[in-house]
Amino acid sequence: MKQIKVTVWNEYRHERHNEHVAGIYPEGIHNAIGGYLKTIEGLEVGTATLDEPEHGLTDEVLNNTDVLIWWGHLAHHEVRDDIAEKVRDRVLQGMGLIVLHSGHASKVFEKLLGTKTGALKWRDDGEKERIWVIEHGHPIADGLGEYIEIPKEEMYGERFEIPAPDELVFISWFEGGEVFRSGCCYRRGKGKLFYFRPGHETFPIYHQPEILHVIKNAVHWAAPTQGAAASYGRVEPIEKISK
Image (cartoon, rainbow, N blue to C red; front, side, top):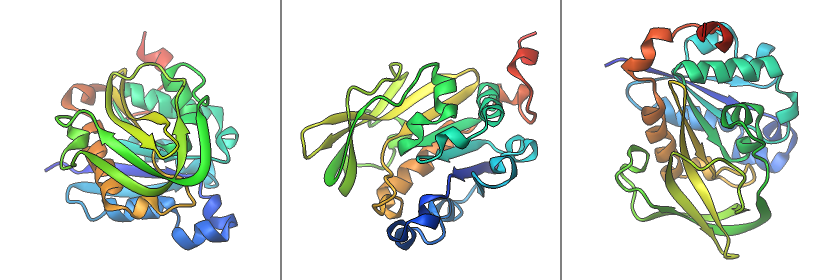
């Protein structure tokens, strides 16, 4: 079985500067997610963080990544434009991308969706969230029941300013009554993109088995297919590819 090469990217700022977050994720969110994925047969997992050279996303790393997982919050503006464009190009060539939680406002997500995506309602009161599965036949929902319940989480509410998803797998409900499109699938070029809402850093979201299960499913869904293989294994500007 061919190994799926996964890179988990994380700002890694909250965990180093906030004692509460450090207590939840002492090795960082990237290692919490990556550590779980390393237990899954068929996955080869590495990590990258904002403060590494080139944000850890060198050509060598991206050329050897089938699926990139992205978590960002405080420092979207610090991500270099050329690196964000390189990731975008890589997705268009066939690399899968999973964007988590506040990554909706990242440069990478906005470049791929073609719009500013930061507009939504939010409230950080530690409310209960139910993530309702509305497409049980979708591979990302495989093995789930009717919903996933998170005891305490930051609320995101509509209107969420994103293009209509190609497929909507999950909708969240919060105690305050708000709802949110929390599992959105897109296809961009030869690549697949999945946005998954849960993951506020002050709660142990990425220790919850169901959440990690969804991320694992999404990795398998987003991994490049044979049809994407022809242009895979290199990073080139999209202008070159289109000629």
